Amino acid sequence: MSAQGVPAEEPLVGLIARRKPWYRRLPRGWPLLTVYLAVLTLFIVCGIFADWIAPHDPTDQNLISRLQGPIWQEESKPEHILGTDGLGRDTFSRLIKGSQTSLLVIATVIPGSLVLGTAVGLLAGWRRGPFDSFAMRLVEVQLAFPALLFALLIAAMLGPSLRNVVVILIVFLWAPYARLVRAEVLSLREREFVVAARTLGASDFRVMLQHLLPNVVNSVVILATLNVSTVIIAEASLSFLGAGAGPETISWGKMVAEGRDLLKIRFWLTGFPGITIMIVALVGNLLGDWLRDFLDPQLRNIQ
Image (cartoon, rainbow, N blue to C red; front, side, top):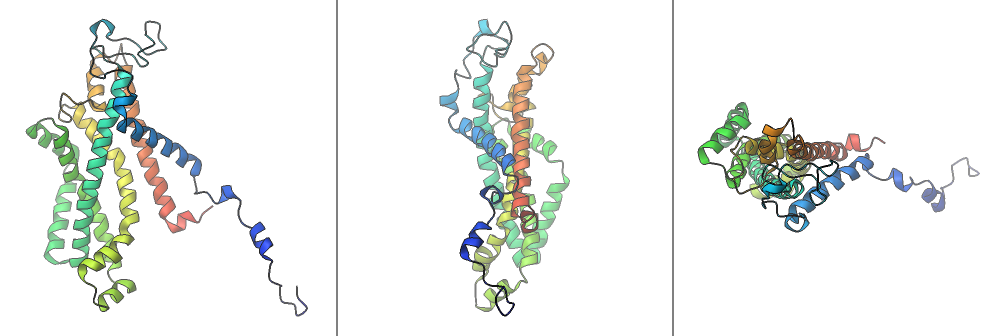
């Protein structure tokens, strides 16, 4: 205290000493975040470098070595860590190659549906009028249909192909982005910074691109992260039902379908790809939840 009873200024050294320790400055929930990122990094690395990582050719058949068990079983062979399928193909190599298919679908479907849905939502929320009414009625009709059954019908009509799967999933996943972005734009269009930009003569395109789009990015990114599990499960489901990837493409869903008849005696043929689908889908959902909490200012400041 000073002579007049006013607190003296705290020295700079004291301010530095009172700073939070480094572990308190890390993002909330960082231990789990590390696990999520490690799993996703492994998934991405396997998907990109599948041809180099796989110990065997995933399409190489060897009927003499068919239906071998995983390495912990007595009749197994050390060169086949997770055993072989009904045609003698290495299960571990096919799992790695299947990650490439899933990664390709994710890398095309999510950006495609995100861009399409965000563009429609921005235009509908900003311009309003007939376009808004038409776009939102289309979104409501699309969301009213059971997406997987309708996608299965279209895929069955077009034939099994990875390209058809990508197009179908983009068509069905743009609607949630459009509805979310439109709702955000409707709440932003009357804000002071938007009114000021319009008063200064900014064009509609500039307002949407420079003022509205940056304010909806967080919500769109969270939804895209949550859609990782949706895309993986949808592609695996279509492949499981025979309407997804073509016969020349290795997919986790096809691996589950190929081993279902041997489930009682060779459960790992469906168990390993099923567990892999579950882990990647679960991590995608958990990462989306973490991002939602981190990007929300009210939840981010809770320590």
